[in-house]
Image (cartoon, rainbow, N blue to C red):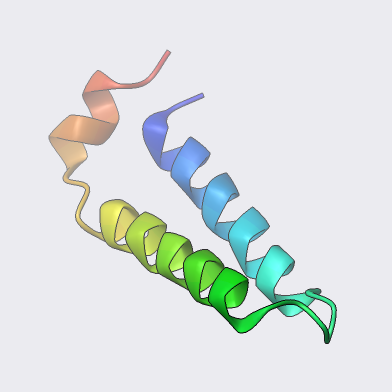
Length: 57
């Protein structure tokens, strides 16, 4: 699995976790999840073609 595919999957999982979080989920936990999502999205968006090509299995 390429790094791009892995990041896309991780972003999807993180989005679902936030979307399906229980109403009583502590706000600090939600903040951590949201920050993790932002970090994953930034890494994905900042990938260049060379990085993607070099990381394919």
